[in-house]
Image 1 (cartoon, rainbow, N blue to C red):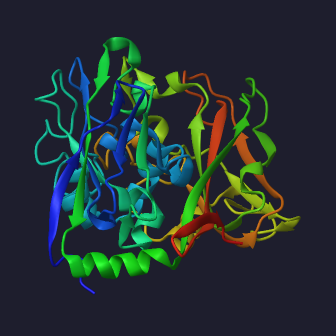
Image 2 (cartoon, one colour):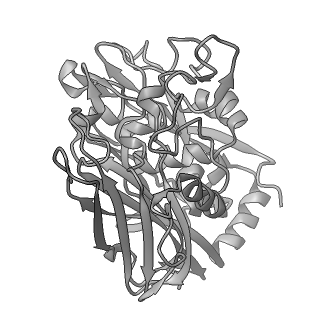
Image 3 (tube, rainbow, N blue to C red):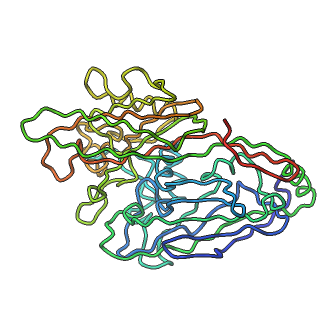
Length: 427
């Protein structure tokens, strides 16, 4: 059937809005059918003084820490570490889509152009002009963007509509990031900031035949979908002293968030434990903590239910040397094409400073590690290795402490029978 023979647009204002904490928007009109493809948060932005550009990877999505769609108290879908997950997801779009579309929607700087220049060949998208994509000192002058809920929640990309005859008390809760360094490219201490009020754009069915058909579908349906579950572990600092050999550090971490779930694939990303490592003169370096630092000679092994999920010896090194291209190949095999740039996935590469815009600060900042699991998890362990060398610089790239974030794509199932529903792990 056609779900858009006759529709109307409605804009929902927040019923609760606590600046810099959370916003709640409700979709609880009686017997109403909302088209999921059109659900869009608008006016997502930031007000700051002085005006500062948004995070290079996340754009305005950096403002959102967590997003949950409820029906009453029942969680239908949620995304923890939303800004970090969005920063990674934005690397999965084609360069042309990021450059011409998404960089204007979320105001990040993904999408790259090649140009003839004496020193810089790879420049970042700047949203049409050098001043684009930034917060500002007032609500009216700040650059604002939009976020489609179907991009946020896989469930909403798998169903055509939300019917309040089944989901009677729908409410969207948006929790905001408290660390300003993940939102805009400056340190917290330079000024104050206030979250913008946001709204939710809805498209509602009005044609009686469409509503009848949608109601018949809504009362009985089975919808397999995925949810991206977060967990993390710490890697202590490891700084060899002068005259000593490089030190190989091994950390074994047990990830309990995935127990009892069927995990399709995983991605890992590394963040300095000390957020000040990303700051220089009150400015955030490159993508800051929403990127993924590539440690020197990274090697990763995943053990699922006692068996290695990756080749013996893990991935990331070969013959004692870095094999960053191997990690990138595994990431592409498991998650798809990457919109990255020269030196983005390696610890250090000659010419990165002179071959791209802001090259020194963006080197090794897309060092994500991805792999396939395809198993029900009872026990998941990560073995993480890196090599540290003597270094006296303020940012010890090979030895500073890390927090390693993991996201697992976990199978879920929405089952509706005679208007009663259940959301469960699909194992």
